[in-house]
Amino acid sequence: MITPKKKTSDIENNLKNWLSNAQRVVIAGVGNPLRRDDFVGVEVVGNLRDEVSQNVYLIQCETVPESFIQPIIDFKPSHILVIDAGLLNSLPGSLKLVDPKEIIATPAVSTHALPLQIFCEYLAKTTNAKLTLLIIQPKETSFGEGLTEELQKTVKYLTSLLPKFLP
Image (cartoon, rainbow, N blue to C red; front, side, top):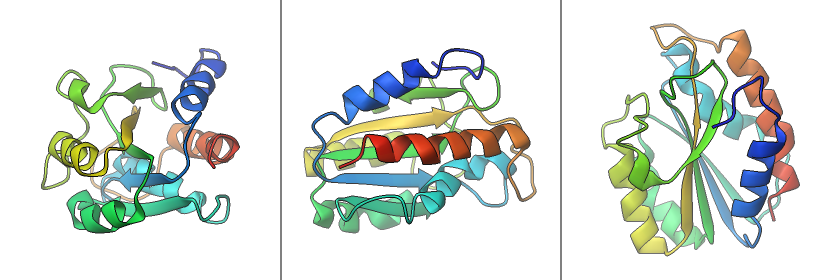
């Protein structure tokens, strides 16, 4: 897990290694626009729009990632990165790459109808793609719009970092 005070090179190395042989990448942002920092995954994807190649398929899933299963399968990804807010018991904006099988131990802030673990397991089986979750510790998930300052910084950081490692 990467906290804001730790060296950012850890998350950079983890992402670089995970994406090292990527050819076609899906980045799916999950979150509720009416639950403050829960929207962080969708915000990251939106900010990447003009920063990636045609080999990257960006999806702003919001609270219904299951609605995008067929377009993801049709894209034939080698890698799928799902970005979502989740409870890491750490400082707001902390980052962690999580295997979907570990999601019970690291529960995401669940605002979607289909549990994220089932969504991820299904995609991994049907696409044979490498799949991981990038979980971001929220500060505030109460009703309201707009990310907190800590999460805005995390979005900016990821928007500049991810394109470095994408095909």
